[in-house]
Length: 179
Image (cartoon, rainbow, N blue to C red; front, side, top):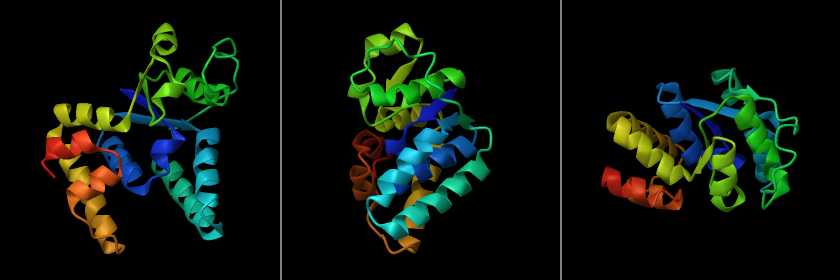
């Protein structure tokens, strides 16, 4: 399965860690575009110059870890689609270029089901996507979640697992893991 990861699921560190660990474990193939990565970096830069530098380093590491994940987003295939936010057209372009099965995004309203179905794609919230991953490979998901929590604890963010998942807007996954 191929999934485009929108900027809003790459920017939050915990969520990115979980998603990329599952991709590295072979549960799905991640895709994005340079523009998606630029949106992530722009969001980080709004938090300060140091966050821009951190995001730049994280993007470089992510690109090295998944060199085949970057897709073009030239805007030609989706030009006639009437999206609620035309600025999101590039995400669909990356999905089409990569022959993705779905887009993982926290902004479902920007990817209406009817339009998505018409081009053979679906958009899933990260909580629903990870819940589906958990149904297919519960051990891999649990390992990825615990690894993200352990990494956060080492960096000074020691919080209970359930709270971490709720803050990451993953309440259904938290229930599934009984975290």
